[in-house]
Amino acid sequence: MSQIINLVADIGGTNIRIGTFENESSVTALKVYQCGNYQSLYEVINTYLAEENLVGQTINACLAIACPVENDLISMTNLPWEFSQSALKKELSLNKLLLINDYTAIAHAVPYLNDQQKIQMGEGEVVTGKPISICGPGTGLGVANIVPLANQQWQALSGEGGHVDFAPVDQTEIEILEFLLEKYQHVSYEQLLSGLGLEQIYQALNHIEQANQPTLSAKDISEKALSNGCQLCEKSLAQFCKILGSFAGNLSLTLASFGGVYIAGGIVPRFIDYLKQSEFRSRFESKGRIKFNKTIPTFVITESQPGILGASAYLRQHNLQNKG
Image 1 (cartoon, rainbow, N blue to C red):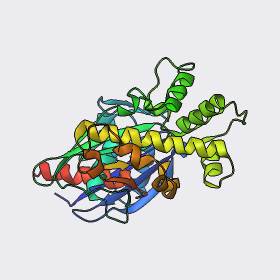
Image 2 (image 1 turned 45 degrees about the horizontal axis):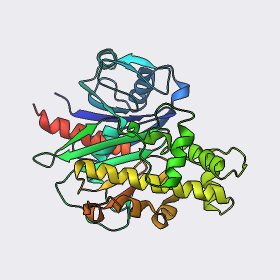
Image 3 (image 1 turned 90 degrees about the horizontal axis):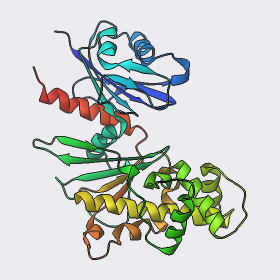
């Protein structure tokens, strides 16, 4: 049998990143493709295989994708692409094809992050061999957990944790909830911890304070907050950080995540220094009679390709488990 080439991809709504690795080597030949330039996932991957002279090679592939992957038929959430996993494997002549959720990939990346790929927020120390939790404000609010198995292997626990009920902890947050209940029958944490969430916090505070400020995008709110260009924007970003701290603290309570809680997604890395000075960490620790959150570390993931890193970790583990 020819040498196996391991192919990994991180598939989003805008870009697809594809790379390869051999055995224990790091991912190489990493390329980025614009989804809008292609009619299907098959077309993108087939283009990559042709460009890298991999057509006809023995290939194991692991694709991280931002949508449910439990069924053979995959309908992408943010793209008009639909495909069968079994058909895609056959069309590309793959030896193996594994599809995992994007947050399963990020979860598998976390145990392998070094100090240059993450920044700690506040105190606490990682306890080796304990559960780890991840949440990521972005377009939505991704959530995952990962627990250690034997032989330095890991099991990701996926779910829809971003859709749990929003739980206000002070009068301001009660009023924010009341504002959002005028729009929605159910208010989840995702309605506050996402790009839309920051906008809705701003809208709620604008209403509560009768500030009569203009509607702004999440990008404008964060930029004005960081430049001290708008008091309401600064209050909105501060509130976002508080709520994120409360939510991350809830995650750590649920699984006793002494391995740490990690913040992923595209939003928070834009204002890490601000987060450090915010009430994020105090909210994380403030859980009434339960005090162990004070010892649990919190981190922001700064690695630019956590999906690729996680897909490669997942595929390596799968290969080890299925030798021969």
